[in-house]
Image (cartoon, rainbow, N blue to C red; front, side, top):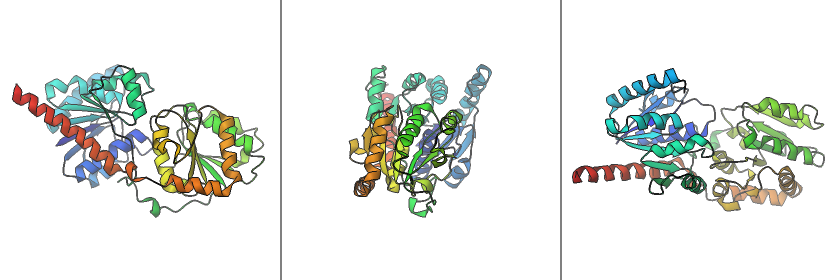
Length: 361
């Protein structure tokens, strides 16, 4: 097949949507398909060159004067590449691809990652809409996406072509016990609740340190929260890290305190690294943690319950070790190979249906 992925950019900034799209493009090309990516560019262009993935640069900013230009340039790209499948990973891409779909004769697939965004309903313009968890699929059904369009392909980035195996990373020398999150610095990621929970237990566990790995628009607000905190010297803002695995491998307890989360890709990486995990019982997170078998689930936006869960693990080394071991079980389903295989099945389904329709007509 000739497969064209369209995404806003391919920068190495820890964006899970970008990472999934890059993985698919590389594996599909490696599998013998002719693959191209349309984006505004980024560091992963070098990886595409290694995997024989063609890249076209397209600025998809939503300024009115740019959208018209982008639509025209996209049409020229499609006419040259002649894709069988266009796979859109973000809202602007699915709109551009939807505009020219009939005239350019391809099947359109979209993947919904952040269904909590109002604009995600536009992903329904595609012939098939991939939900990254069953929770996302249910949400999209409630918002009017026809069930016949929806398919669930659970996320997974383990054994990604973007980075070496976890065993090739050298753990950092963190202060132990180390409590870590890897997340964008957004309020919806529950950073404030995590800081509050840590402050609640810091007096009892004087050796514990909290590492906040990531960047984002709310970082200064969170930093202000800890300025006058008596335990602020044990709360570390690490910023974006190109190799978060080095933090994960040195972490005792990984926390993802999100208010909403379609899947929680970072949880699969924390599981692979052998962290004990505490995460919000919301949206797709329970699916990522085997419904509580691989990590402790707590209510979102509840710093007191989160603090209690942290206390339980820090007070009992045997309990902590048990959850570290449970996190590493049943990881094979999070491989990029499985995600790619299930995605290709959806492409083939569309291609077969198109062929049957063409023959009948």
